[in-house]
Image (cartoon, rainbow, N blue to C red; front, side, top):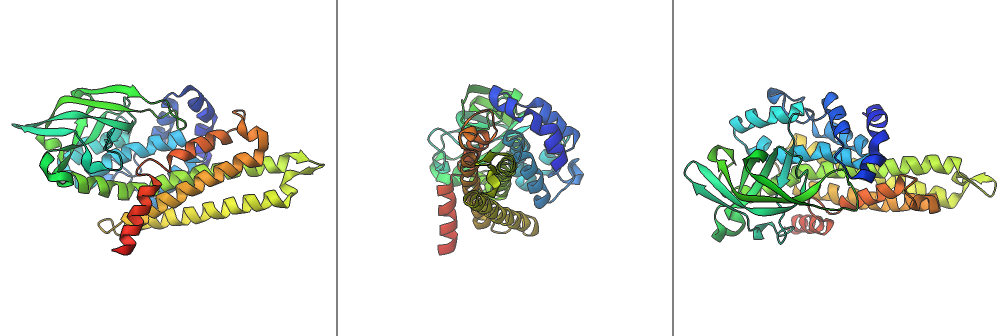
Length: 364
């Protein structure tokens, strides 16, 4: 994975960021390596790799290009509801496409006024014979306009609060519209946009689980996905450390390599220690997803995502500092690492939300 990331993915990372274009060449390289198939069970055309293996894959990709790592993460996020709560027919129909790299997926939960407050979503799904009619707008959707399928959460019973939310698998060509793509600080090659469902007709067979189960599915999905966001954060931090370390060895001031200056050595040591601690926590969370997939994963998933992303932000800021003025320029990759790290503290639940999740579990 490390050799593949350095040889195939790293050379395009800077250009992907500068042009803010979806990295199709990197995606196809990952498909050739059968990376989209890693997490898919063998019976549906995948490799059936465990979550620690998946975390290693994401970490190595993120250490050179956070965008490409996200491209590999997002289809899994979109398909976790199918994998864990979908019917055998849905799994058989959609998972092999994802595994083969012939389709990609998005996860449509957030709305303009329903980010952390999922229960306040406005999107509706109304039963009409053998179909559901979905109407509403989702915001901050990763892979918007690229994905072939969208896992959509909508209210089937608006009077029931979070218990009235249901989940659906919607194909892009059923009438899904992309209204706007965001101009972002980081991870620019992965499109994030506003997705509109204007009376999109969805067959009842594409209901995931049962009516009213959507909130439970949404939260359960994030519990299983957050550890790999932590892995992305660890990869970003490690990539920043590696670059800063090599720079310190080659950069001379006052007749010595700056790697000889104890103050900078201490910075690097702290960066590496925090990153290793984050890595161990991420692997622990991934191990628990593998060993007890039906258990309570909320606390450990929130901890892993929260801690690793905070570490990534801290480490990349320090890495920029180690390069001084050079770190602040686009001639060197560390400012990109710092920009990319920021989103890991925000998506799949802000770190403030993660702390609430952890605190509630501790106090319950």
